[in-house]
Image 1 (cartoon, rainbow, N blue to C red):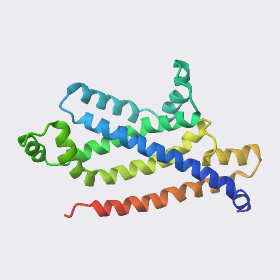
Image 2 (cartoon, one colour; image 1 turned 90 degrees about the horizontal axis):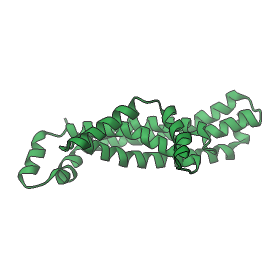
Image 3 (cartoon, helix red, strand yellow; image 1 turned 45 degrees about the horizontal axis):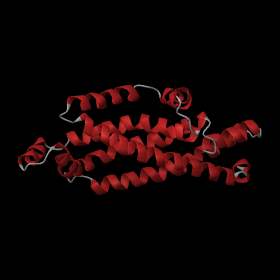
Image 4 (spheres, rainbow, N blue to C red; image 1 turned 180 degrees about the vertical axis):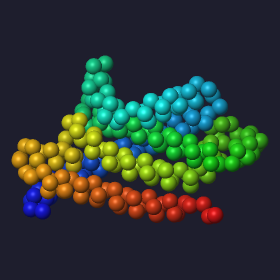
Length: 216
């Protein structure tokens, strides 16, 4: 425990950087995944094809490959930037596929009669989705979306392996490799850092799930 206590400020900085990665990843994947979920149920065939193709590609591709593509492939086509943003981009692209499926399942859980009633009063697809279907689908989306978010937080450790720097994974590398600290206490500190994020996050998502649960 001396290793953890002596390097507590370093672990705290790593925790904050990891929280930044997770926050950007959550917002980006939620926005992109919701748009793709709407594509998946769209009456427009090309949009359905885009949504289905996106899910099939990114959901069946390892996160490591997506991150390699963002970190080393994008600069080769003239897209340059910090590894932090490359890592966040890869995490968003990967996670959005799972968010898309969670949103699609929530939309499909709403009775078809709701969409028919929306069309009967003159609403188009976008309006019926925004004002009628999505507000009801939220209750069904929360449970699977919570699992996706927790998985994304844990996946952020892989982002740290691509030179992001400053996150919990990088702190573990710095202490064990550069400073020669014993691996077991160093990794214990890293694991505790992720638990500080995932456990309260899981409790919050559980509370939210109960809050919006459909009475049966």
